[in-house]
Picture 1 (cartoon, rainbow, N blue to C red):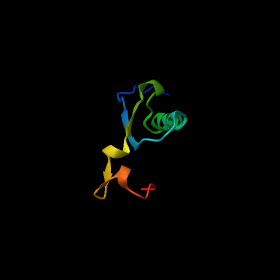
Picture 2: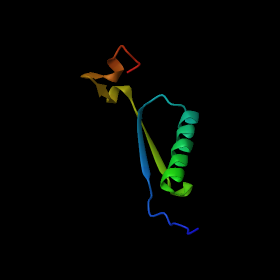
Picture 3: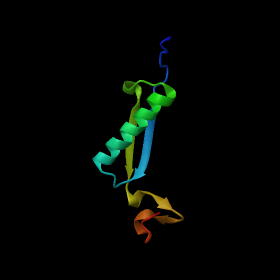
Length: 74
């Protein structure tokens, strides 16, 4: 079998409202990395994942800041 060199360096940005634990983020990292390895044939050491925790006062939905919404289930 011919070895294929990876020419792709995926930089994955995850923007999510604050609240995930470090353990939850680790699980997401493992799953996303595994998916890129399997589907895109990207080696694990070439997958970069960045989390950006959005504070509820810096994010709006339907004309209101999320921090002011009564329904926290968005």
